[in-house]
Image (cartoon, protein in one colour):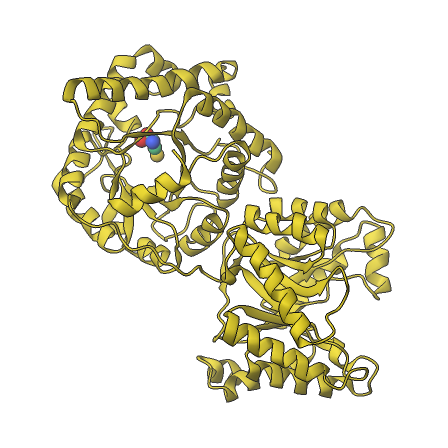
Length: 583
Ligand code: HCS
């Protein structure tokens, strides 16, 4: 199945998934304590029969029962060396069920088989011992067997960790071009066990190229409304809802799922009305639940998909939206060794305490994002960048800008960053365009567009505009959108060029009003070489905010700047600005 076929399918109808695998097989004889893959291979007829029942009920995408057939899970039963065998056999079971269903019914509608992937049970670093790359490899191993076995797409489901979703999604994308759906499990507080909220999960995963995102297992459909509503607001991909048949309870030592097929399907219709377009059932749901579900949405149109993309940066657990009309934002600039002897010295010694302190201080001073730059001589930049990120993420929950001109360092950083980062920066220089733009796409990052080229700085506004358009054209060709871009206004020093401020302001206006992209400036350049710099900086900042500037990279310890920003938002009547100014 191609990604385009997947898109057409989800646009053409409400897509019906299957119901529970595990809980139904348990009712049909699979007991706990045994390796489920082994049981299924030894009881193929039972699994085929269950799959046929789902197909009869109306399933369009059948999940192959490969849920826990990864090396780490199989190892619990000493079966890790049979990973190829199990994945092949289990996909064959699903294929056989489709074949028999077609033979019995003559129904030749399209049915797709998804290779089913889930968590390994081992926590990934820094929480656990498994490194991110080891986890990617575990997923790649299982996925490559599933590809050879002939699955049409992948589903990564019952995920509690966003970072593990990222690892699995990257693994799939590095192996093949098949569509990938990602589905997380939420607790009753609307967060995953690892603390990720629905908006953050969707923001990160759709930017990385997941074809559909959503939730499964968790609770019953009646408890999923808020999550689907939140996801719908910001998603530009279809949403999956595959709940349990209610919240289970124990009765006489048996797990009971309370929701009957009728009630289940009635609740599911509400989720469809709220935006879920790919629906099925998880634990406790039977073929009858799926039959009722398929009947109840028959003829219903697929929910509309948002055309605009969501502009936001995230950590693993928090999203900071960026709005062109919204409040002005500050990127803390201090984690940068240029001109800072003390930071240079400590980094050379491998001491990250100063970086941690800078991160904490800037967070407390009101920065919205933090820039991390460790470019200097005498260190291994990649190693230092990764360590610095880890230390910073330990002390702050602000999203990060990865600030390096080295594409290898950029990739290493984006790979492990567990959310949606901002690349600082991509100019119209051959290497940057060829290496960094594809990284923005692959890792779902936003990027700062720096309007300079191999020929150097643009001579005037027209040249600057041309470079901006050249970079945007390349970005759009890769599938990035205007919501992924923040243009650097490229501020010169007014001491050398009297038009420096006006030129930057013209760029900001043009980007916001004509192109609909965000803008950033490195504020302090404007006053370079002049006395009483803070007055020039703050006055320029007020002008720039009035022209529509989205954010500035600055030192948040400077009260004058931070207060000018707050006052500017207040005077421009921005939403919530009065409260922010007073507080
Ligand atoms: N597809 C799996 C998910 C369990 S949470 C199953 O057993 O239905």
